[in-house]
Image (cartoon, rainbow, N blue to C red; front, top):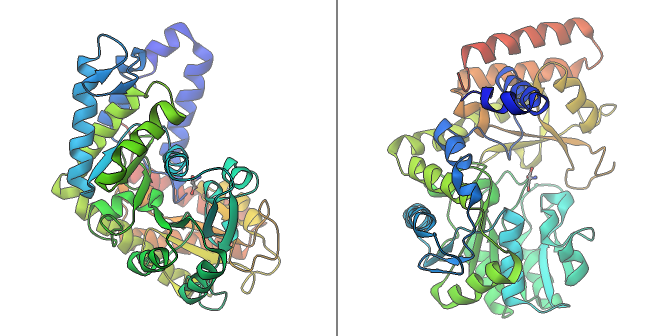
Length: 415
Ligand code: DSN
């Protein structure tokens, strides 16, 4: 795809888009929530469906001219059903947070109680952070990971559920490297007459490919985003048991959204179709294998990993023991100048701040899309370790930067 059409009318935006393409091509994206969609998904998201209002649902819209919007949304739904196997799916949420919002609005009243993992331990803003509408609307209590093991402390979660008597227990996380015991959380939820909302935003693709356990059929509600591991472009999705279908659909539209972003739903349809191809399972398995190899190599370098490793697409490095004078933000900044892009992240028992935390989160979905395997990812771990060991050394930075250039040229994106 070329930006010449944009340039003909707006050279400022064309320059920024061209520079962003160059940045993505020339750097290693290790942000665990990012990925690179196919050109087909990009094209679908840039289609004329951006012009179309289609409030309502397929075959029941509030506007005329929706026949092709209907076709696209039905395809997205059909393919989502084939990927995740839920009793009901709604593909209209604009984002993962909107998907979560639709569940809260459908099932809770203001002041009702949500029990969720704290942000510092790997949760998400939309799980009840005070700065988010969830923290401002509902009564929030958090459970935690065990600081020693880095694993969710399910016994403590159970005890807290009995004390707090929540209406919803949120499982599924943004910075948690381990598999989740969905059945255990569901048992706890049922014992206290609460719903389980499993937010699989990060692992939608891994779950679809069967390389991560699935909460579908176990949790009452499952939400996800579509631009992370499933590579279907920006957006959200919400799934539920049939009995909640009407409540969820009304909560998405008209409850919390107006017109669906039909161009994004076209991207979802295309990306879900790609994820149904057999190669997607190979990709998803490679994402996990790469994260495992990356974690092992970091351990060999003396880095401490939260939970000691990973079962999914990310590793969380706690720098406090190995590099007490280097914060996650220092590491992020030093790495970014070499073309390695990841994010600073809080760690369990955080002793710094959310903006300048003690850890880094490293994810493999995007580099796996560009073709990296265990050998390449081990070298990436070596490069990361070199930079973090000597964050101010300009010679190291120049050498790592040169190697990143060579790697990105060998594994190009978007020719
Ligand atoms: N911002 C995303 C992440 O990085 O995990 C979640 O919404």
